[in-house]
Image 1 (cartoon, rainbow, N blue to C red):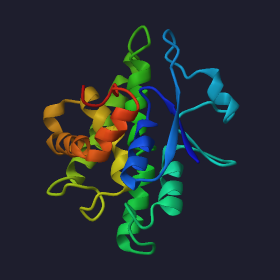
Image 2: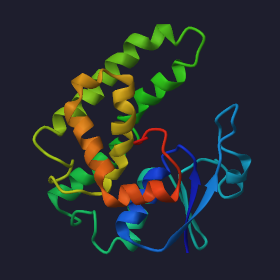
Image 3: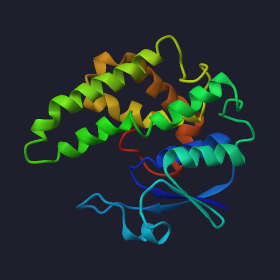
Image 4: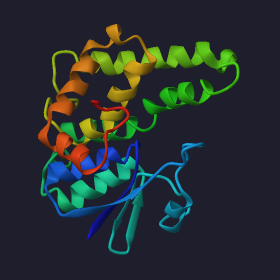
Amino acid sequence: MLTVHHLNNSRSQRIVWLLEELGVDYQIKAYQRDPVTSLAPPELEAIHPLGKSPMLTDGDVTIIESGAIIDYLLRHYGDGQLLPKAGSHDHEQYLQWLHYGESGAALPLMLKLYTSRLPDGGEALKPRINDELTRHLGYIEKSLEGVDWFVGNTFSGADIQLSFIAEVGPMMHPSEKLPNLLAFRDRCHQREAYQSSLAKTEPYAYGPK
C-alpha cells in the first residue's frame, strides 16, 4: 500500500493531490509540526534519517524529495497520465520544470522566508534575494503567458510541482506583477483532485481558506 507520510502545512500536500489525480489507492499517515519550533516531529526520522516531508513508502521502498516522488508515482502508477512521452520535446521540458520547481525557483523563496526570521530580517542579503526573486518569478510569469500549463499547455506533474511556487511567490513579491502566476494558482485550486486532497488532509496554509 502506498503511504504518504504527510506533515501539516508542508509540500507533501502536493503528493496527496497527485495521488488524487491518479485515482490510485493510498493511505495518509499524518504528522504535526512542533507548535513552538514549527519543525517536523522526530517520528519521521524512523521512516528516513533526514526526517523531512514529503516522504512516500511503497512496501519496503522509501522515496524522499518531491520531484523524485512525483517521478516515481507517474512511472509506476500513472499509466501514462500527467507525463509526456519519453524522448519527446515535451518530456525534456517536463523534466526541466519538474526539477526547477524545487531548485532554482524555490531557493530565493526559502532564503527570504528564513532570513525574515532573523533579528534584522537579513538586511545584508535582502538586495540579492530580492533580485533573485524578481528574476525567477519573472521567468515563470513570462513562461505562463498565453498558456494554462507549463508543458505543452497540458496539465502534468510539473504543474503540481510548481504549484508551491504559485502559492508562496505572491506572498513574497508584488502580486500585481504576477497575474499569470495567480491565474495558474487559481486553476490548480479549481481542480477536483486538489479539492479532494484538502478534504483528506487539513486546510493548507498556502491554499484557499
